[in-house]
Length: 371
Ligand code: UD1
Ligand code: M6R
Image (tube, rainbow, N blue to C red; front, top):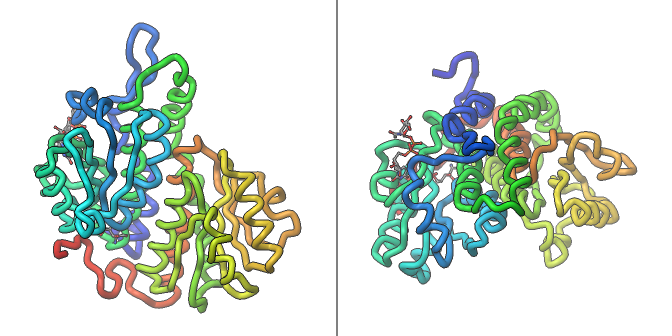
């Protein structure tokens, strides 16, 4: 049921304040005599000790689910202290990469039925790793075959382009990082800030959704383009990959997400006055590095669309040479949830304006059950 919306993708983008609320329901709690804030993931509570002691955590997934894990990687590394590596399921299988008994392998999948991810799960089980599922589908193959896991509870996702599942997956993996990371005095303020940020996140998503018309206007300007580059780094490398994936899969426009730190190592050659380039430059520890990336792109007369935190337009783009999208600022590890929303809206409007099928893009299926 699409309700008042024309397409499922549109509905699913706009219902993210609600889907995020259900994802977090019952999982953020006040604990102990001092009522300190904490996270409770029912499906993991008997396995946390094993996960903490593991030698490595591997995130395994495909497409959007891989990107969500990439967004959560830095906070998991920070709070757990355990090395975290990333695997695209098909690539792990192609390489027959090493997996050990001391590893925790986390399988991320909206459908829970993706063939590549399921085969990688079988491979990890055969190699004796602890296998954890993060899925949206109760009773799915991945939910059934993992040792334990977390349902993201985002509600059924119909549009082939994954939107609300992405933001709910990130939130679950941030909660996973909080659950694995110990409650030490030294990280208490950080943990509390993240938990407060989680409570307020649906409101902040509601705020960023107000950019809908602005993204439609931007889509009108980009309607006839051949290509769109998206640069991000740190927490928002994933935002660049996911924004570009949305644009290519539904709007059928070439788009690449790129690590901004790699710009000088090749992509810079593409920059001219015509190619549109989006740069994610919201406030976090990487902000000044992104400012200098913008300066270098400006110096080559790049056609820039810059996403920055509210109030930062003048500091990211002093000479008004670029188009600026201002988004609400949240805790750094939650910022990818906010930043992807304008890009989801842009991909949606581009698709409608270009006259393509939004909910069932050419050649794609919601659940990829063949290898
Ligand atoms: C569970 C109930 C929820 C109830 C809540 C009350 C289910 C599906 N969930 O939620 O309805 O409101 O208790 O406390 O009945 N699992 C995997 N692999 C996965 C995903 C999950 O093995 O990929 C396992 C978990 O380890 C757990 C079970 O499935 O044993 C349910 O997971 P989840 O729904 O996330 O648990 P709760 O949030 O506790
Ligand atoms: O169901 P899964 O999360 O395992 O699906 C993985 C990918 O097939 C999926 O995310 C795909 O990339 C989407 N069409 C992206 O929007």
